[in-house]
Amino acid sequence: MKETIAVIILAAGLGKRMRSPKAKVLHEILGRPMLAYVIDVAQAIAGRSVIVVVGNQAETVRRAVSMAAVRYVYQDRQLGTGHAVLCALPQLPDDCEQVVVLCGDTPLLTAPTLKSLVQGHLAAGRDATLLAVELEDPQGYGRVLLNDHQQVCGIIEEADASAGQRAIRLINTGIYCVTRQFLSDALPNVTPDNAQGEFYLTDIIRIGYESGRDIGVSYGAAPREILGVNTPEDLARVEALMIGRAAIIS
Image (cartoon, rainbow, N blue to C red; front, side):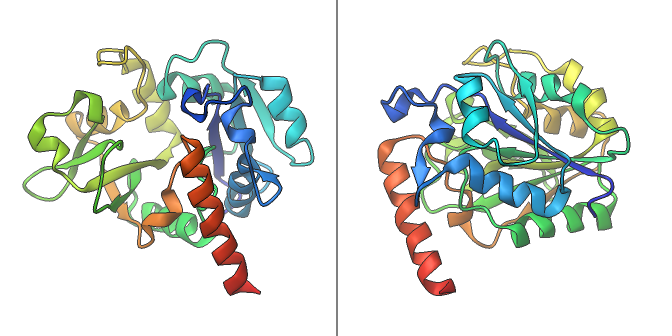
């Protein structure tokens, strides 16, 4: 698996809701920056083929995880997740055929979940597979749109969603496995035509569906794994869950 897969970790965001001058991905959980946990999981499936996109406090982020054997890409302006991945494309290894995209603020993600996503994607021979989970309260997340045949036809961010779409409980985790070729073909067609004026990586799903690409979904069995840290309250909740996980392992 490791020979043809690269991982791009998005870690350039400002993290304004943390109400802290520290870059969001550097907030610690059990004494480690949350980004370090995501790097661990990425390396479990891609070895040294891991690229971290940095922006806000870039040098501080690099120093904090300097022990990890990863590559760094600088996103000079935070123009959205699509733009961040576009910045990373030139740094992909020559032998990379599949690209996994992760968020730097999901420290509970585990290697088995990620391996299941990749294996399902490869077995089905898809162009793109997104990891999705059902939540009792999907507030704050982008919703996964399915057609009448239960095929993924798009993702709508909550800020752009209608009332009916906001009632959807199947949410996008922001975690994808995509062929390098499709990613390279789709990203130039992403536009900032949305409420935030950003280049959303999620738009590649719609672009792929509309152009007849094979777009699938992997259903995550453990919703807690994809909890993102956006606020101090989120950080406290994730750390409590991490403590519980450590207690079970020990």
